[in-house]
Structure formats: C-alpha cells, structure tokens
Image (cartoon, rainbow over all chains, first blue to last red; front, side, top):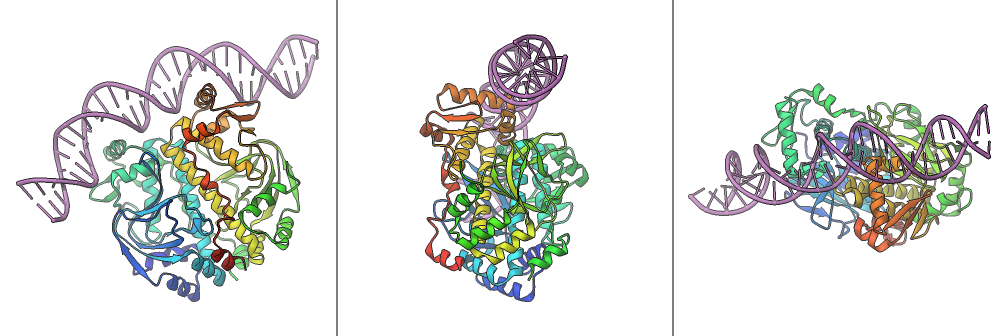
Length: 252
Length: 252
DNA sequence: CGGCAAGTTGAACCGCCTCAATGACGGTGG
DNA sequence: CCACCGTCATTGAGGCGGTTCAACTTGCCG
C-alpha cells in the first residue's frame, strides 16, 4: 500500500508528467483529509455538492438511483481516482457518489480545482487525462451492459478492476482485494445479486476466477481475458505513448 | 434549419457565454467543411485519427465494435455536437465514429483544439461544458441499459433525442426528424432490431409515439415521459444556472 | 447466544433473442 | 414502364438467459 496520498500521485503521474510545482499544488488541494464510513453518501443528485473528491484509500461508486429504489452503478472508484471532474461547471448533479468501504479522501471546491488547472498546465493535463480515462471506462462499461452476457460482463469487470488497481501498485495479476458485495457487483453489472452469485460459481467451477473473503483470485488470467474479450488498451496510461508533438505543445 | 455553422454556435453559446473573439476562433477551427456520405467511418479504434470533429448537419454515432461484428452505439451525435474531445490527449482510440446520414462537418487537429482552449478561456469553458454534457448522456445511457426495460429504454432515448435536437432549434416537443433505422436504434438500445420493432409497435398502439417516414411523432409527451421516467435535467444547458462566483472565476 | 448482513441454492416465470419468412419501398437498369 | 434487387420493416413460433420468489446457510459482531 502506498503512502498518504501515494495512490493519487502515482496514478496522475502515470497519466502526465508532473513537475514538483504541479504536485505541490495538488498536495495543497488535498491538504485536508477526511475519513468517512462505509456506505456513506458523499454527494447525491438532489443535493448538489460543488466539490471534487480525491480518493486516497478505500472503494466507492458513482451511481444513479431509480424511483423504485434500484440503482445502477456507473463505475467503481478506487484509490487515486478523482470524482467530480465531470461536473465541474454544470449546476445540476445527475448522479450520486458514495462509499463502498471506509474511505480516506480529500475534498476541494470545484472552482479551486478549476483555478489550479489554470495555474499549472501540467496538472491540468493530468486531470484532463484522468477525465478521459473515466470517459473510456464508462464507455466500455456501457458496451458491456449493451452487448455482453452476464458471464462475459462479470469477467470483464474483474479484469478492469485488476488493471486499475495495479496502476497504483495494488494487487497482482492474479490476485487483488475486492470489498464489493454481490449486491454491489450486481448493481454495476445490471444483474441480480442472485444471478451474480451463479455467475461467480460458474467462474469458480471453470477455474477462471474465484472470490472469497473479499479477495479475488484469478485462476487463469489468459482464459479469463479470452472469455471476457478483454482488451486493456481502453485503460492505457497514455503518457508513454503520447506523441512528442502534442506533449511539447501542451506541457508549456 | 440553422445556417452554415449555426447549430454548433447555437449549442455552445447555450453552454457558456461566448465573446466575439471566442466565436471567431471557433470559426477558424471550423474553416474547412467537408461533406461525407451516409454510413461512412470517420475514425475507428484501429486507425487512430487525432482529430476533433465539429458537426454541422446530419446524424452520426460513436460506437464500439465487437469481434463477432455486433456493435454497441455509445451515443448518437447530432448537429452542433463535437466528437473527439474525450480523446484529446490519449494516444489509443477505443471507440469508432461514423455517420448515420450524409453529414456536413469540420475537422481540426487535436492539438489545434488544445491550443485554442489555452488562448480563449471562454471557448475552453464551452468545450469543457460540452464534454460534461457528453459525459452525462453517456451515464444516463448506461443506466438505461443496466436497469430499464426495453420499452422504458426506447421511450427514454426518443425523449433524449427530442430534447437535444430542440437545443439547436430543430424539431418540436411533439415531432422531429429521426433518420435512424431500427437496426441502428437497436445497436444503441442493446436490443435486437426485431424487438425494437415490437416495442415501437407497442408505443404506437398505446398512442405514446410513432415513427414513420424517418420522423418521430410523440402522441402524448407527458405519458411518454412518465413511462420513461424521463428527467431532462441531465441535459440541462447549464449556463443560466451557473453561479456567478464560478463564472467570474473561470471566464476571465 | 442472538441477530443481522451477505452468500447460496431451487423452482417457476417472463422478457428478449433466435430463426424463419413475408411485405413494403425506392432505386436501377433493361 | 416494369422487372429486379437490396434495404428496411413486420410478424410468428420456440428457446434461453436472467428474474422473481422463497427458502436456508454462513459468518460476523455485539
């Protein structure tokens, strides 16, 4: 596990080169840290909270609630992720954000973040890139719900989580902690918890993956990736491959 | 119908206040216009095209293709929309973009757009806000696929399209042109064209909405919105409600 | 030990898919 | 002008994947 803000800096510096002054400003935005309980609501679509959240530790989710009480998880958010960048300017929130585990995070006013992006272009690049990655995750998730079956969808999500966790140094190619209940998985996968249970059993019986004691063990990574038709490029950190032309132009 | 670039300026100026110099720079980005045929591919996930597309006329779609040839439409794109802002920095495209009808558009290099955003902060605001709206549409679409039935989902999409078209002056509350085939609707709704057909028949029989001759007619807007549980706030233009505090800070 | 959250399993049901076929329309060439 | 063809719309019958309802079990914490 990384240090106090380790995951955040680790992830952002993989997304764009950060100078010392960039990380200084980032640290200032994250100066105050809070710890919130499991299953806490940090912002809801009714009460607009004009904040950006920087996650240091613990899992959360962005989701939408329906009139009948059901919910759809848009994406799980992990240490190093940032929540709220997609609603920096708009005045009406259209989604909610809550924790799945106890979580350590920092909270900054939206306009402080906007101002920070103006001051430090390197930081702006990293935050923009982070938003692009969110967008890609959302799109992939959407494609899963639309065109993949339950098994494929579940396998795909597990592989996505593994890859995202590894980007901040957590987990291994065959093993990571996953504090999600089957109900929470179901809300992300657009399934019933009951059916998620059966899918997981199937994955276990096939030796593809298993979940026990809040820990995912991937028995056969290649086979699982084949089942899921998983192509991790949608999560690419992107900095390494960024053409010099663009980097020069944008990085000041 | 609006003028040469009317839809684009109409939409962006609803998203943020644009000065004359902002729109000038926007016009420069859009200086060269092309017309492309129906069902043309403008960028695919294999061939990375580092461009941003500004759509003036005609319908298109962002989509993902699957190994077996099926596809999932992420969102339809309409006159005034911008495609590619979500992949301004990343080097690997993870989605495709093509036309559903003949389309008139402009195409600008990604770094030209990035540079423009640095030069004119008002324009940057509008483009950022446009990206936020895309994000909201994607999220709503994701929730539809995950937790709404075929009927609700279809009704919701029709209402979304109506509202987005009206933002650029096209269509009316009860009527708009919709050049989509049932196959294309199906690819967006995560359904089969056959089932889309049955859903549309149901909508027609209930007097809720009908589609004929590439035109959607909404028989009972309120009832349709009730069926869809449609809440248009996720599409809010947002400029009107933007707090002065933020606007002052960001608009320079 | 008691109580609640989460996991597990079975049986019946239903929404949507699959396969198959036909009909309506517009464009194209003879 | 009509025969032809491709695309899109439409409808039926049967099957499957995932839901719903209803238990029961396991594990954890007070």
